[in-house]
Length: 195
Image (cartoon, rainbow, N blue to C red; front, top):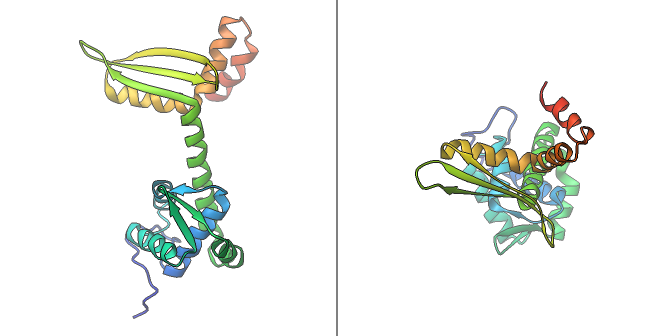
């Protein structure tokens, strides 16, 4: 039996079932992300796309860390020079579809994290029932936009929270356009999102 064959439970057709390829994928991700990633971000990227078995991914992370190909500091994984070289030389071993799905997924995760830092939200229970969703967009020195929205239940508050994180800048632009009677500011957003 080949010891390099990985468990394939939870892996979609075309995903990785070779332990060496899994390690190459991790090196590729950390190289292409161009910034350290948390374990959860790596898991969300790779497991979310069903590219690798969960336990095989954790094993590969551990092995690469032990071999000092990647390093982990304060919960963040970063790629070392040896890992970058592995990625550069061996990334083509990985199927293009795997590289493409992983790259797109990690970029989406990083973009979402950026939006989450800019478009802040807080959900609090309201006495008598319901939930308050506080939404803010902050600059370094001041609050650009803030609003509170009453939601009837926690699930609807969480859905609205996700929408504000993704579209907070557009929501702010629409509100600003309406309050300044400048329809150009919200017309494009409404046209693109009501089809």
